[in-house]
Image (cartoon, rainbow, N blue to C red):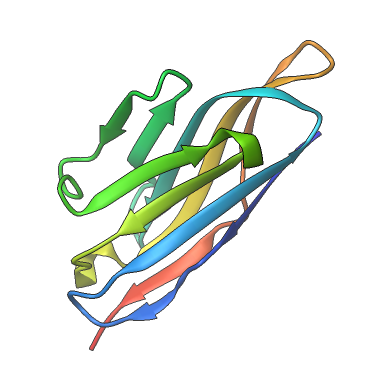
Length: 120
């Protein structure tokens, strides 16, 4: 089993910053990929940013230049630094990871989500 626990969401004013963290635990051999997705009310879930084990990153056009994804491999943690936040960034943010397990399998796991609200 692999568990992902997100933290760091909350209410922030437009132009402000938030830092989301996602800690993975369980039967982890190594983490191949980590990503943040978000889902706003009435909209489909969308990819915000991703990072794979060679360090390559990918961002949605709407967040390029404002958000940064990074990983701490020693702690099995992925961070999303969000700057210059806009009201349209309001959503539930979900952590996702592709994990090689100690049992020899591969699991695609999701966290429970954390609410980010950008409002004055």
